[in-house]
Length: 535
Image 1 (cartoon, helix red, strand yellow):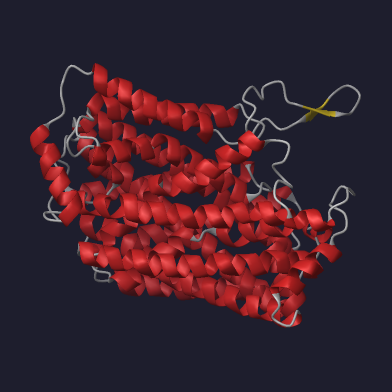
Image 2 (image 1 turned 90 degrees about the vertical axis):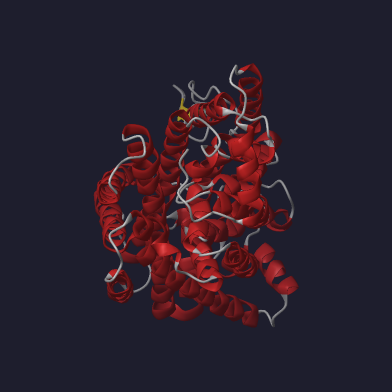
């Protein structure tokens, strides 16, 4: 056990109580309408929304997982920081604003705008639910590992109980606050996360005379060998420490990180909470500045953990790589700072899972229940009721899944969600926005091909089918690890693009040129963006 459990629990509880009070206060006067539940009534400014997007984007993977990856794998761990940031730039400027201008509540509004509504919305809803679920698993795994470290809980059953508590709190936030309450939680969490990371970074640099060179040198000296006793040292600062034996997996992971954000429904949905295209652009500027600053801090935090704590200590702690940031906080400021930083990490997990849950529940209720089952004629109050019920169901599934993946590196788990998003959503989004001939068959073929291929390849990859012991006790490749790469994007993404092109060219029904023209005007100008999207 590390730190003082009483301090840690007190800080956790304080955050939960304060944020729940905020959620209740800001949501008290909200109308019980779909617009209020899904978008917070589009009442947030660009600055507020930029802070909320930052909170949504900087998940437990960004704080715990990336810091741990840099601490353990050095240069290769920086791939996550660079990839996540570059991905955000592409998502915000290539996809997010046109989507916001064209749609109403969800990503499927755009994908189905000029298509046959029912098949496209069904495919988009299924994709959104799948991506949100995989992303949720990573957050739940982070919760289990974090609390195991802070409370000295090593029993798997007790860790499962902690994951269950996180899931229940997630459901409560969504049911009480909807998008408005969740957005305020994201804003609070982003402020705490960036502020806490900045304070820790200053403390780390102060120990090395504010010299990054001295910090890197100390990390090399502290770790002459890796956790398995093999020589490390200078290799910590060199590329391909982790991926040298599998360069194709490295390329595939890079593609997932850089392209995945532009297909993440919970990030894209944030742009519907602002009232105009101008405020959407302001959101993007704030988000880029805040996220860029944070990922610069992870460089200091990661190598600071390697230099101050040591790779062996990190990997032997409960939570392993995910424990690097809390252990660094304990090294720098003892029990109190560790409790505060861990409280921030816990806040990060709660805020992100709430955002993911509302995105998934909105997609099911709006895109499938209303648009497919009720053919767009569902009563708004009934639609919101279905969204709330869906949130509860998703929360239960996330608890079960989180228990199953407890102990996995959360940055790696997030990369799998990015892989599904890049393969299932991004090709269809780009072709919908920028290819005039793209049609319903092409869209459905692209989504289903990207979704099915990415999920199947993940299931039969070494990431899931872990090595096993043979009769002699030696570790060997699992017989069901039929796909050799740990990330499927390199294969699944091209398959989705090819399927979209073939589906479009072989369809008998041509694209609707009138709706295509209307969509182009909306995506570029934002004219009519607040109107209902139903054709």
